[in-house]
Length: 237
Image (cartoon, rainbow, N blue to C red):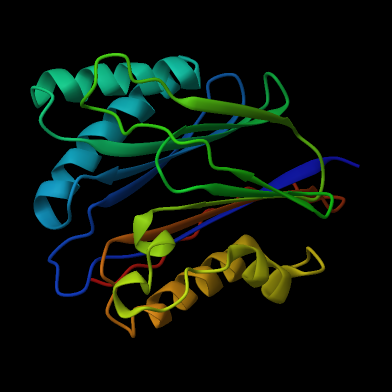
């Protein structure tokens, strides 16, 4: 059976902040597939948004030109470091469904871990990686996973990972949420992303202490005749 990708993002800005410092962009890959860029600018608000926009725009432009993800992360680092004189940082995660290699590629320059469920088994990608923009020899941590049905990848920013920490609440339990919301691996990516973000906001008592983003990418069997591509977005204005 052929496969399909189900992708969803849920995000919210820091409480009482004018803008979210997290930027998410999606781009089609020139040799087939899709890439999602998640950029978390230093601090929050308009200044962080400016940084994350700068990084995300550079990254998606390079991906669209056929540059490989690891090289994209390095180039985005060099670009930010040059533009801002090494004074500001940005956490950058790139997730690609690469049809040329038939792999799911995860490139991380972020301290927040990512979670992968594959055929019921859970694995963390949590090797410490430096954000881009500061140190000269910063490199991404890259993982490649063969595309197959029953893959779920969860990427979060620090507004989710650190939710509740200032109020003494426990750290968000992604594995428990995954089992609770999608234990049978049948829920849509949007349902899982919304549930994780809601749990993070609840840990902060409805007032997120930082910009929070959840990206969920699922690879699953495609139903016969399911050749339609769909993209949906809802956002407050």
